[in-house]
Image 1 (cartoon, rainbow, N blue to C red):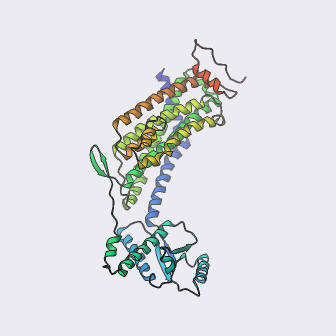
Image 2 (image 1 turned 90 degrees about the vertical axis):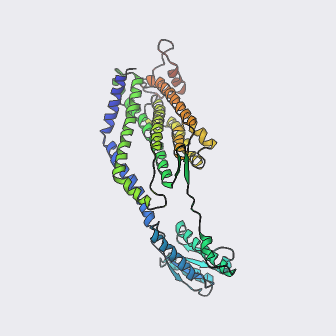
Image 3 (image 1 turned 60 degrees about the horizontal axis):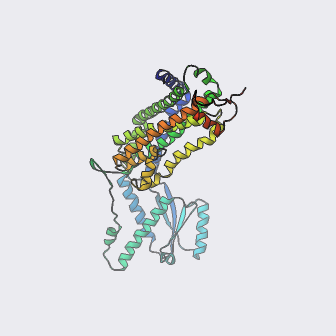
Length: 441
């Protein structure tokens, strides 16, 4: 192995890619759009609400006033605490006109004419069954519906207490809820864990997921492009196939790390302060990202990248077009997706058997073990085992990819079969027969 030639390939891959417009557009525009989108969503949730015009048909005649007071008190409390804004309710009391069915039909026409946003039917017969009816053009606004439901339940509690002759202030005590604070136990002690830290871990998690797809696929495309343009015939005259393979993998990996470094600088100086400020005003709080999370992210990012880059290289070497390689490219895709599929189980039980097994399997370990380290205290032996298995698998896949790459890189013409690829792997110069060339004449 001539490392000088390998690093020459690394330099070529790196320089060529960072000079492209696509690299700079993705590097500069993507983080601005991404963090801008997050900040916009947080601010939108913080300031969301708007006005909701609701007609209330209080058949019993005693719920409209307390409902108006309940919604007004909740809105006042939200403004006082600068919490996430809920809808501003404008209630209109409507009498029953003729019968209830005719009243509903008249209100339905008002909704369609956009005079009101919806109407609420408070029928004593339905209330005895613990039910109330809400009508609107959309019933997907769960925030509004939950708010109305909560207000009606509060009123029901106070009415029940009053009907049974209990003190009126008992309702306020019954409506109080326990605020459960979560503390993460580590070897260094305990620390309060808020939702923002988990969100940061999930962002890193899905960043790794997209990276393995994106840059692994770029390695595959780079090999196929060089074959299709016959550039490799010139390069291979002075560089061995294995040196070329490693150079491409390292070079494209450095491009990815450069892009991440640029994104981090942009995030720290532009978008992230706005996101942090917006999150600080919510119940999630300011995100806390420990150094250990960053360290594990870098470790498993590098291990996962080299693993999947080797797999994509092995897939690309025998083929001449993207279309030919598409079917086999599904194999690493499903391996990566396997780590995504189990992440809900890991979130619920980071130390459970599913989490442990998938964090030790080399093809899912980069994603699942990182997530486990961010969520809980993982035994050291499990971390060391996952790293050792990943390193061994990377070397094994690199050897496997190199065996295919050294012959497949110069094969053109017909699409190779699986038996032919197996012969390429088994081929040893001077010991076994040279594989038949598939080069087109």
